[in-house]
Each structure stands twice: as C-alpha cells, then as structure tokens.
Length: 138
View 1 (tube, helix red, strand yellow):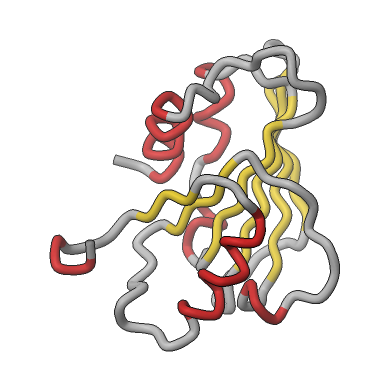
View 2 (cartoon, one colour):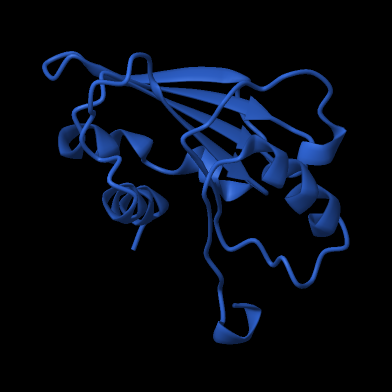
C-alpha cells in the first residue's frame, strides 16, 4: 500500500476525507519524512473533496524542492507540498495548526531524536498516526 493510500485510510478514520464547513485547507504534517517526498500524492485528489491539501514534510532526511504543487484542474483540487529538511524540534517559528500529523515507518524506537519530536508534536494538539515496518516497533 502506498503512503498516499495509507493517508487516505487515516483521513477516513478521522472523518476528514470529506470537507465539512471548515474554512481553509486540510493541513497535514508528515514528521520524520524522507522518501515520502517522492510519493504519488496526487492519488489523493479524486478521493477527497478538499480543494487544497497542504502536506508539510519535515525530517532530517527529507530532500527535494522546498515547495511543490500537484494539481488536478478538472477536479479543481491541488496538493501543496512543503519540504523542511530538519528535525521538528529544531524548527524555529510557528508552523501553524494541523488537522493531524503522521510518521510513516518512523523507526521511532530506534532514533534518539524522537522523544523531543514527540514533545513538540504534543504541543500541536492534533491527532498523531504512526506506521511501522515491523510489528515490534508498534
């Protein structure tokens, strides 16, 4: 299963796949991002009715263009990707509010930087989803 389809499942579980009356874009933080920069995020667009989805990819291994837009004009929808090559706890300034955060295959139990990142994540007050490569990481 691709990261976009996993994200779609989580949107459904959090009742966020369909836009309600909330103004503005759907904002999602991908923390610990690395290869997620190259995922086919445009796959999300036909399955949600948000006009704009903002994906903020944060991770010390996140490489790619700092800002990128994927659009599907026939649907009137787009995804804005912002890539920040840093650990979450090292980012200065306000990142804004998020509907939720996700850590794909984080290896959380293996990296000493995660406890500080989790403290910062908690301050956002949004749900956090975590996926893992293997069962013992859960």
